[in-house]
Length: 451
View 1 (cartoon, one colour):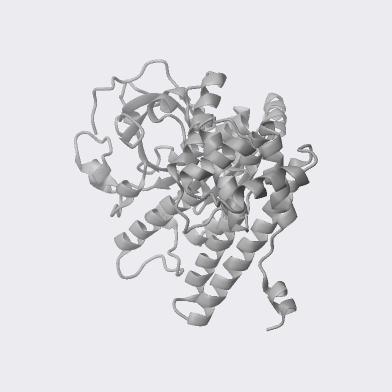
View 2 (cartoon, rainbow, N blue to C red):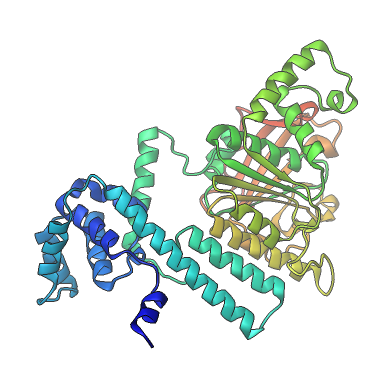
């Protein structure tokens, strides 16, 4: 094969860009923190450059001084030092880099080449899958999307990560929370009593919200979606398999404007209502809430749609039992097995997207036969492994739904039946059915209750 062919087949990379990045960090340690935010060792194509960057990465993690001499010593300790070339190569890197002022331009070049290599590798793997002919087209398409999504996020689905690479992110997050004064690691639901129980909506969590019909679980989920969108300026994706986009918009408008939902449905509006609606519409127009009311969506469909959203903060799905399987079947051989498979896929989706996923679920009628109608984990309809996959399981219960003479009129209980991040128990919320809205009450149940 001719030398020209070998050069053409070489994977995309920029020797000059990689050297300029390393040289900038060696002559100016102040720019290291900026580079660490943008690049990872795998972004460097040449092994020698990758080893130098890994060394600097490790030294940065442990707050060690970084220059040509200290990096050289650290590489000797790590066993990546070559007596014949390393010292002279480090000196060369510092000589050919006139200034570190343009380091982020060099970083962009290295990152761009790394992304191109990732695309090339993903394309090669996808082509191999197609040529093997194993599996259905929908399955291969899902794998292909995962591979491309992994490239877009700059991560490899196959690589294992050293603990020392994860620690800086954890420490940075702790610092941010400490400085902000917020002790909530996750997104706020807008309901402080619920936040205190579950520490907010945490990244990669699958939160299952279950209740009997009429308890307000859709309203509860929409309240959370609205509060997250208003509080974070992030994109919130709402998948509604039961209600239309117009119905959802009507509920959100009622909740934000504090205008009775029945008035909005009938159009019997007062002058003051129109003023409230105009103000609420102005607020809602500024939010990035995406609604998809396709009743035939599968987890794979939702996953693919969410991957295309750059600033995604939360996913809400209403509801689990209406979803179709990857093959497009909603029933069949074993519904419990199908629902269990979908709940597992939802948990995987939450981890891949690195955002909380709130999924609504039906409950069986088992609680109707008990004196105490409060739901339990065993009431999850077609439960299978739903409670195992979920990080948090929330139940909604209103006593006045079953007892007309109940003292707790329009008072709802949010029961935390499972919580991987802390305690279980329940909190009281005010339910305002005319506005389809929940709010926090001052008084709460004790934490001694167990579920």
